[in-house]
Length: 236
Image (tube, rainbow, N blue to C red; front, side, top):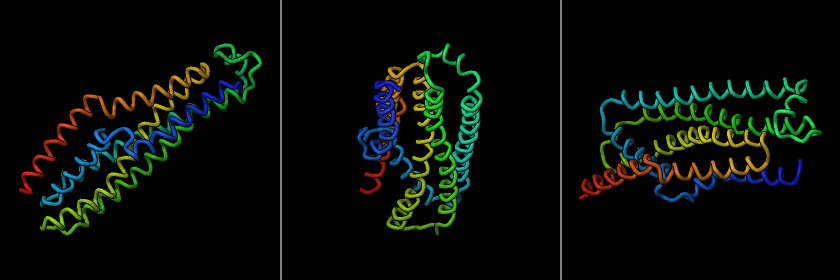
């Protein structure tokens, strides 16, 4: 690899592996979708604990489990397809080198490294979807175990306990979905190091916009304002 390839790879890894810690530290701001959804799920858990039946809530979580399972299955199929390209392309290496902007004397391992970079986010996403499904099942069990608390203090305590299970599960699900962005960015390395850099930085920019400036982010911010107003009125 040339020096620019190493630089591009370093930029990609920094963007890909640094995104989730940055979001966990709320470097995207406290008004992003992730922060809004944590507040909304908190209100949901408090409402759930005051209902006589959890059937609708269980269906909502069940739908999320099905979504994570679907993404996991789709991820596995994509991994098989991309992996087949890697293991079946050695005999076609000269033809591949003629189609892609690779140096004429580029070794096969360089093409393999680029395919492996595409696979890396996909494999991480698959593990995230599997873990999200497991955590959501834990959340269903935790919801079913609650003794229908009546006092405000007990409801708040149970809501916090349930959110401690639900929020990590849905964050894990979101990490798996975001892996697709970086897999697409990694595929741009096939066209050279500069497209890889553009793809990695562009993925961060797009995810930042979606989390903080998109219509969904603005809509969820409005929901959080209404929930905060209702909770303040209930306290008074």
